[in-house]
Amino acid sequence: MIPFDFEYYKPSSIPEAVELFRQLYAQGKNPMYFSGGTEIITWARMNAIRPGAVIDLKSISECNIIQYQNNHLVIGSCIPLSMLTAVNLFPLLSETAQGAADQTARNKITFGGNICGRIYYREAVLPLLLSNSRMLIAGLKGMREVSIHHVFVQQMRLESGEFIVQMITDREYLTLPYVHVKKRQIGNVGYPLVTLAALKKDHQIRTAYSGVCAFPFRSIEMEQVLNDPMLSIEAKVDQAIDKLPAPVLTNTEGSAAYRKFVLKHTLIETLSLLEGK
Image (cartoon, rainbow, N blue to C red; front, side, top):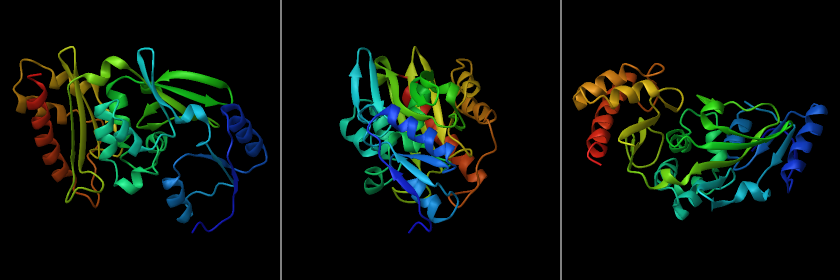
């Protein structure tokens, strides 16, 4: 149970949602946008957030599409993770989404909600980082389309009053060779020790990670080492790990030392699978 009252709004268009945010913010209501809501409910129950108003985006048609438009795949931010897997237009994204939670949770967690979340993992962003996807964002200043690399730097960096409408990926990325590996401490459900997503384009391997550091990331410096033809696979992996962008995470899932061990063997496995493709 959420231990405080708040106002609830369900706009049917992008302009209506933005205008509601403008009005509620001016009234001091501390409004928040809402799509799947699983994480908002969790934080609110803990009194970690206290919105005075919630704006539900799930009735906005542009946020609920998953379709090809010319040479692009367009996915609305309110599409549940379970639907990404069922439709399977982007297999790497489908596998990544399927590993993010159990089926019941994936029915609620939305694509945009996972990417914008506060938890460390946010695994649905990994294929977008690898495919240089773009985001359509709505806000008080209007609409903008921007590279994911400009707005996702360790976390989503939206301006006040903005929300993700759609994610746009060039069609050429959907059929490239790929690998998705999720290593947990135990079982097939739960947060990762290491999640690694990789694809190969123009003979170059790209990699993105969740669970390794306190944020999901793609590292160009690591990729340069992993694609060095003068190094053995083990040397590539050892040198790439030395270029991690932040300290390795230690938490209840595992220690930093154990995570580095798992990461090393996951990278060796991934490179072995992709180098011959």
